[in-house]
Length: 134
Image (cartoon, rainbow, N blue to C red; front, side, top):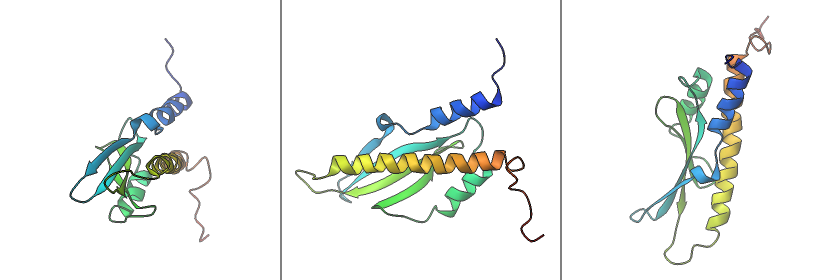
């Protein structure tokens, strides 16, 4: 069998790390009264590229909207998106829409992290390694 080209490996990496609705994990914390949604948004077969790692580390102590959303490392080769949603006992209006919005946000964040990784890998080919000062 012929060895797989780098382009095909990259396509497979994108497919493997693409966030699926079925991967959304939903937990809840009764004491804090919130749902905790999480989904993997980036997975690498090796170590996380430095540009992706720097992007996530720069935001590790920041929570952004909607709700309380954060990036978290998942082992040495992955990143997940985590969101806290407040809940009330009884009927939870709009929960389904919030989960769909979370999934859409996860897909957007996945694309962002993949673009960072691709730019790092192909920096010289994309002419991103020139000095703006010159």
